[in-house]
Image (cartoon, rainbow, N blue to C red; front, side, top):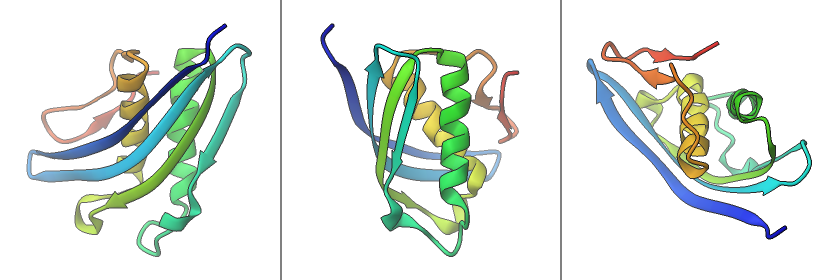
Length: 122
C-alpha cells in the first residue's frame, strides 16, 4: 500500500467573544497500515509560560486517535503562540483541529462555541 503522508503549517488566529486563540505549528501525519500511534514533538518550543505543553499536545493527539481509529505517525515542530492568547487548552484544540483538517475527519461536537468555550464530544 502506498504511504499516505499529509503535512501543513497549521494556523489558528481567532477571537470569539473577546477571547483570543492564537497558535501556529508545522504538522506531518502518516496514516499507518497497523493500529499504532507514533508521536514526535519538537522540544525546542518548550516555554516557561506553558509548562507541560507536550502533555497537552499529546492529549489532543490521543483524543483524535481514539475517534479516528487508524494507525498514525505524527510529527509536530515550529510551534509558536501568543502568551496572552494561548493556554494549554489552545494547544490541545489546535492539534485536534489540525488533524481533523489534514485527514478530512470531522468530530461532531468538537468546536469553539459562540461564547469562546472549547467543546469536546464524548
